[in-house]
Length: 276
View 1 (cartoon, rainbow, N blue to C red):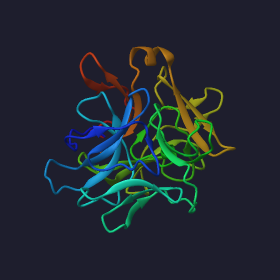
View 2: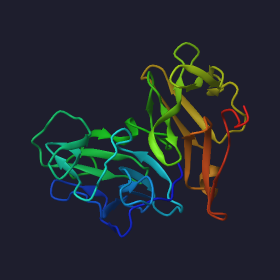
View 3: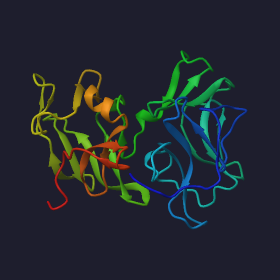
């Protein structure tokens, strides 16, 4: 979702939230290559707007939010909130030490667990400071309306869910799923009404029938391990390094690329047009 609202006068830290390094309203973390940034944002310019923890492309303006931690639990005042590590979990805590959002892992007394923002847009909880440490939790398993390259989305539940509106990241009317019988990509309206279908998976073509030939995306549907992912054509990546797939508030499922020359997002439309 494309948004321009933000929290002003923030300072950027490194790419890690640790037990001794929480994140406050005035701070963000930035992936090591400077591609993604994570911190607090709010739904409008009013000082009393609802706040969220979100992730966005650091060098894209207006700000483009690609992941929201707490879409169903907005914060009414973030000034005394902290995003911190506690007992092996990443939690959003208010001034009364109440957890407003959490990664929901079984409690652990380990002080070595860290949250690290990676250059692919994945926020991971690692069981230690080493990059080879076990991943305990990752934001790729909990997408909102945006599907970043390399993310393996689990089958059996909505892959993506649109925002309620262009300024409200709470769950909207449209969701993207894989049909369990036809193995088609489908868009549902209000959770049950069929809105669009790609056509069934074609294992020979390694793509979904009905999607435009020559698409820049190569889907991988792994029924044995119950996930779907995609890779991006190298020629497209060379021309436009920032690529994502979006479930829009309009019900459109589309590929988006950042056009640095025009400072806009553009791309291919997979699902119905707005006139449908």
